[in-house]
Image (tube, one colour):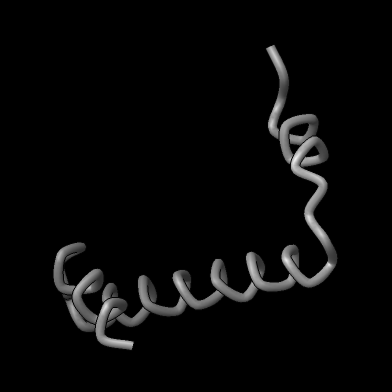
Length: 52
């Protein structure tokens, strides 16, 4: 069984792709943080994300 690091390295992502993934992760974290502060449900946060 492979671990996450092995799997990730086998994807052979470019630096640009890695950067895009990191940006999206940070964006998702920001939406979650906003949702937590506003007392929003997961569905409400998801709809907020889809409104981009």
